[in-house]
Image (cartoon, rainbow, N blue to C red; front, side):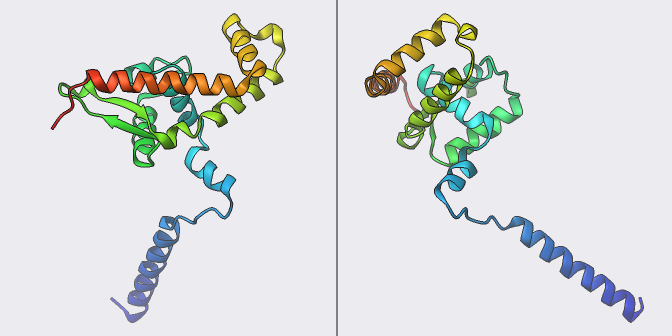
Length: 172
C-alpha cells in the first residue's frame, strides 16, 4: 500500500472513531423540563406508568392489552428502561417468566401529578360531548377536589402494592 493510501486509511479510522465518540456521548440536559423529557418524553413511558398506577396493571400481557396497542418490542424496551431508571421495579416471583410483575416505585409515583395534568389538558381541550361516562366522572372527580382525588388514587395504589407484595412468593 502506498503512503498516501495508508494516510487516507488512518484518517478514515480517526474520523470514524471521532464520529462514534460524538454520537455515543449523551449530553446532559441543562434544564429540568429538558431532563424530564429526556426520561419520559416518549408517548409510551407515561402511558405505561398511567396503566400501572391508575389501572393497577402489573404484567407484560396487561400492558400489552391497553387500548393504545403498544408493539411488543417497544413495550419490552420501555419496561426495561423504566426499571433501569427507577420508575418501575420488577417483582420477580417464583414461577415462570410470566410471573414477573412491574410495580411503580416512589420515583414512578412522582409522575402521577404529571399524568393528571395531561389528562386535564386533554379533557379540557376536547368537546365534552366526545367524553364517555368514565371520562366525565374522572373529570368531575379531579376538578371538584383535585388534592383529594390524587391522594385517594395514590392511597389505593399503595394499598394494592402492599396486598400484592404480601401474597407473592419472591425468588431467592
